[in-house]
Image 1 (cartoon, rainbow, N blue to C red):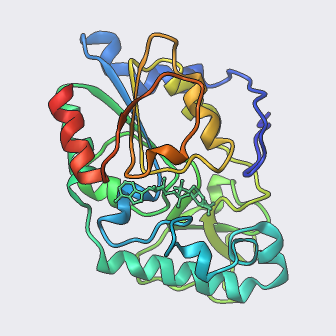
Image 2 (image 1 turned 180 degrees about the horizontal axis):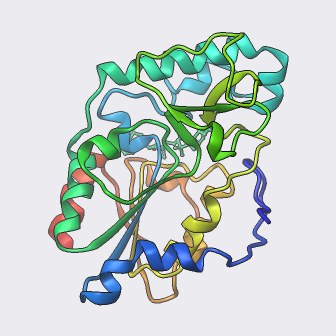
Length: 261
Ligand code: OAD
């Protein structure tokens, strides 16, 4: 049973994801490779031209988050929310992965890499990363309003796809973006926590760690894991775990990390 809801500071956890973890770390079980997990947020896509949420020119300054990114907002004004995500999806046609996404993918040559991302864009995929967990959903997927996490009704769409009121999912309910909104469960949190619990190195890139349960994931890293943080404003981030800080933007910061590793 999943116990996490977006926005909630809830750390109860049942380790039912051990099979998933074995599957993801499969290579390093047979080949002697170190495991790196990236926990990424909006900042890694900033240099591709996608605005972050909470920086001074961030998306949440222009759009009230409770109106466009919460389940209550969707129930109140579905057309507004569909339009908001139609625009986010269409923006994918105009952006490309940056050097930070590419360096994350390139590390697969030397390490077993898993990317746990809060981002709903597809830039890690396009840069070539093979193991990606999307905690907050994906712009290029649509789902049922009645059963958002039922795989039978989740479909891939292209970036120019628009969802309109009246479009139906396979179960007859209104089609909606496959995005985890505030007030909804975060089904991918358990596999993500299980992966981080087995990692050798955790690298946090471009997230303010404001949103739970994602923000609590770093506490699943083993005591002896190395933890790095890449962010141009690292002072905003407070944690009790010892962390090596690279106070740079994602592209320069990822280059520095690769030189250090
Ligand atoms: P935020 O906007 O909260 O934080 C972005 C972080 O990126 C901040 O720490 C910035 O300092 C950093 N940053 C800015 N420019 C950067 C750059 N060039 N390189 C690296 N870092 C940079 O975004 P998230 O933490 O991702 O969820 O937000 C978490 C969640 O809140 C999102 O997934 C979204 C949002 O509400 C939903 O909407 C469901």
